[in-house]
Length: 208
Image (cartoon, rainbow, N blue to C red; front, side, top):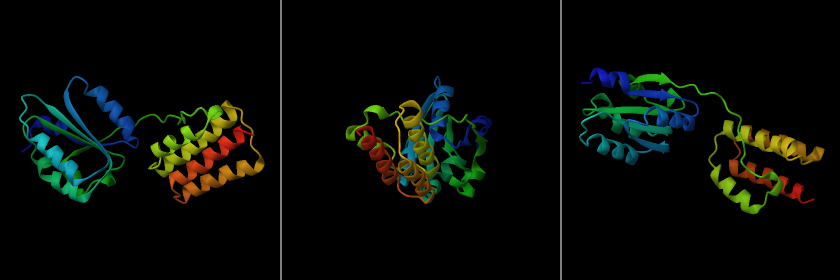
């Protein structure tokens, strides 16, 4: 049976930008006992780890903050009972970009809140004037699992920075190629393919 505190504090937090949600929660709970479990996809082994931590006795509130873009069905089923009857002083905050990430049974056990963060323009973080293969490879590795919406903004940001900040000049054919890459993003082409083509084009143009 949940206490009133648990009813107030345990909840699902919906935020389209889970990275920003983590930053916000880190600030909000900085002075509280808390643990983060940040995954791209929450698996059954992750759920077992959370359950194990939840059963460690606490004298004050401990916040277990789960952050993922998706939660496997078996992981949610494993967490269902502990969400329904959490141990004393344990508070769950479960973050996802959409409520559809959760089974109806999970949504019925926890309150639902929404965190709206201001949209920030994406920056590539690349020095496009001095771009070389040593920069390109780790950048592609970092973003190889980028979601479609983020990838589209990233491609646009790189092209914008190239033209407006680094003053690189491209032919009409090259600009058309960049537009085709954006179209390929919409067709769910892999991020690795898109970014490799884009960054190699910029690197080779720079050396002409």
